[in-house]
Image (cartoon, rainbow, N blue to C red):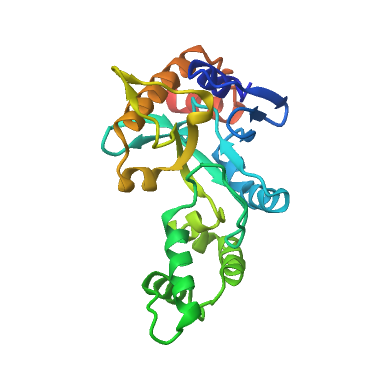
Length: 260
């Protein structure tokens, strides 16, 4: 089952998870403000679902978390500074212009946060305000600089449908909308140490953009919790059942010919 490793991971951390639809790979985390985790079978299917997840999160005004089975290489990342491997998630929170609350989850990536600040600065004085990142992005895409988040989102969506453009890191990140390609599970920065370790309740867990977490300076409690998520990841992949790869006649024939 593609959801097996994720359910083990959440359970090891003491996070309640409820199977919504096993066939579709949908898991709900009811005590994390009702987050819904959609588990894709592989990285290709996850990437293909980008537009659908973004549109669903926009229409329903609710976050969607996209994940992969933890035994797959693309399902994890190394956290700079602490050098540990943890599960990585894509998180969708609608389009750029959406403003519904993310309930403490810090998932808006730095690129769109920068663009939001730059667009806000030119509302009052368009001539004197500088927009270095937005100007660079517009020039790179060969477009006139947009003056609204909605217009920019439409442009990014169109660009992400072009294979050459979708491979550009900035386009790939911005294509998720008001969210991030690279989120990790940690705790609210207000969580503090008590004696020798942080005391964490289910409601303290959040999804956080990895770059924001590292650049913003993670707390000691967050660093300690990340180590726990790493331990939970290794525990999950030990218990997961991976189906053996079926024989492929063409491959077998090639191997026989090479061994002849």
